[in-house]
Amino acid sequence: MQGTPQSRSSSSNTVGVGRTDTVRCYCGIPAKYAASKRTRIGDKYYGCPLWPRGCGFFMWEDNVVVAVNDNRGSGSTQMEERVEKLIEEKTSMAEKLCKLKVKREKDAEEIAALRQENRMLHSDCAKHAKGENFFAVALIVSWLFFIFVIIIIMNLA
Image 1 (cartoon, rainbow, N blue to C red):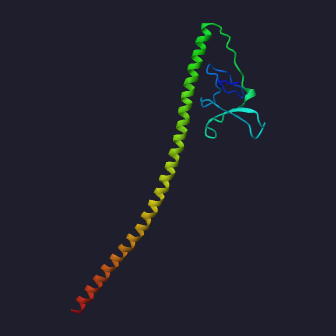
Image 2: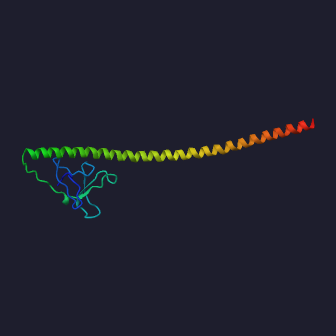
């Protein structure tokens, strides 16, 4: 059985079937369909294909509820079209959100690399500053020595 989630429910883990007849995770993309290898071995389930970064959607196959389309008339058809459009918008937004999450992770990695580079440059600057301080002190000492020698030469003359 397959379906698209129409709402998150805290009291039950069920989803209804949309017109696409595909179970979708909360990211809005088609859910991964697989067999359990750990608990309830062999039982089929649906899960977010972006796991572990995705929305965390998980549902056993036997919890998927199939909604019946009873064709109640044009009002029902318009409502279904509106629901389908909203689901498509949600899917699009969920895909954008997933892409933004991936971009945020890449940006965080880049920021970490830049911070490390900044620390290295700061360390290099500190090393150069110590060298500059040594040369400044040496210059001052040489000038004092030069002045001292001039004073001694003037006193002897």
